[in-house]
Length: 525
Image (cartoon, rainbow, N blue to C red; front, side):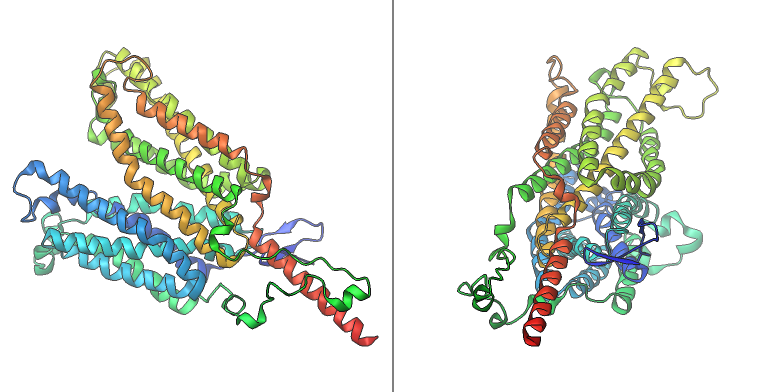
């Protein structure tokens, strides 16, 4: 028994329940590889960026390293912001497959070229090219929508979001562990002339290998998912503005058939109030989460007297590892079941509220740290033989809860808004445009979030203002912005839970089949 929905065929059991369609792994592997290279692209260089920039001739004062390192980071996000929407539009015109393969080829080359950087000019040019090609990752969401159906789309989007989190962790780990292998692993690379000359090449080659894997699999396994024939039809095949909505022959017979509404003549006309609300709340979400990502390590490292937690680098690393323990179960088990039960919009609203709760409550830990008497040993000692006081149990217990709240909200909000952004597109050939706008907003906030949060934190701890303008100010502001985003989502209708492009395509097929049946009946008469 089969039931036609969206853009693929959903199978049902004898009792009417939906039977999940098996995931198309041959195509999905390509998307996962592209999704992995996107976060790796900007996290890979973080561990060794300071040392790399310090070795360039352009730096004459160690105090200038941070400035040039900031330029190197910003160049990537700036080029990505400027070009990412055009990748989506290009995929709507020439197809998804060539854009994805071109992006993977560019990643393959630029990762390797960055690893052989010997000057700041070379590094920033290659970094800009890397930002250009990783922008093609905007196409993976339209492809995911086009190769899935209602029974497996949630699982597919959850896996793509999981790869994002794994990519963020993988990029930083590879960049830190494999840098300068001649020095760090002399027993294996001690005689390597190549890695002695280019100490940052090995981690970059690992990322190039990921792109190469996706390129090879994509070339042989990935087929075009966008129906280019229906999009690139000659204008003579499309009804003109003078074509009557009701044919004269049917009007004479009293058969007034209602035609579907005319399609927008411009991509910008699809920016309805609902689409705008989705894009605006997505941008606010990314800005707030960007602030969280920048604020937390600074907040944790700042002294207790200044409103921080007074942790050392190793302890901060342990706290960040807590997030990885929650990612897999939340992304692959908790989210799919919640989305099927409540819908993507309800999960989106819930995620925004949980992230707002995280921003509002995390600074409270600094009050507990002060109560512990500024004893950093109680916070930083992981393996200690001393008697562990109740405050330390309470502190770490609350911190684990905070990390869970953060990851639960992050996964609920991000995965849901990614699905909703696909659902609001009226046709498949607008998917690239809408996801391009979404990713462009993301890229802008990736640049602005750290700048805003860093400035707010520095300003707040330099003054003795009362709450909420003390060290809690940046956290409170991020929480308030998330509450504002949640309020805006109240104006988004529940119809965004449905993949509109698939529904419209199905409706058009039904109209076409009905017209064909009517024509055959008329001919028979």
